[in-house]
Image 1: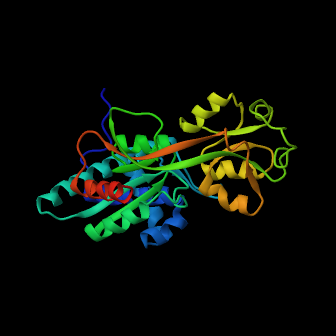
Image 2: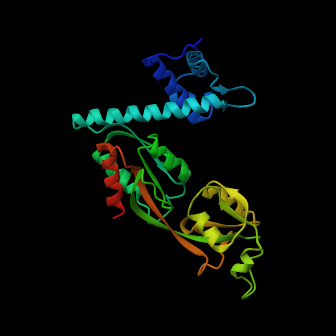
Image 3: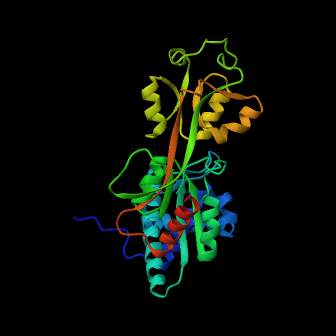
Length: 305
């Protein structure tokens, strides 16, 4: 006998419950979502229970052990984000028929770009606000691969990432550069070396922290023959391991500057062990960007011209 589907046509109530679930997942729990949703915890709990009943699955675990999505909840969240992204695209397209720039715009940004003097994302956002004051921007800091996937599946309308490989599914618009150096912490043996003590062979004998996803960092790691002894998934994690004095790691010059100024880090062999990282804005190749997305894209390209 065929199994009866639990979910029929989506209703406005379903969409409202899914938006509550999205907020709870983004905030990491019911308590944190109270301010975001402006409703009390018991009401949030009831909404999540109603959604679980409607979908026939347990979406999350909550209790003394803390909040966590179930495997089914993670799948529902991913599908809900795709659906909501498609709905926002539809809203943009309908609004364009009336020449109005409204709705929400989700953008994924790689971390630690605000301190880069060559990065003018804030200038572009200011111009975008002047051109589209009724649009609600949503900015998410994510790793490269998460931003690429999010743009491809429609969860993000636009992304800003270090350019490391090209996909035929995406269009790339070069924005700015970032200077990367290899750093060690204050208590590391290479912080105050004797003259001529360091060469690239010496570096290979020390512990090294590398980024755990495909990136320019991985490419330079292979070129230098460095062996990864620790893995980090963002620049903040690299900084903590470098500051421990036990690891060498690549960081953006602008981000490491405050640590260098305080004598907590120094660049190792900066003349030869360094690389330039280029950043690009990415959008889906097809369908073409909506007028809202194109407006922000033009502002980004102009700000970095």
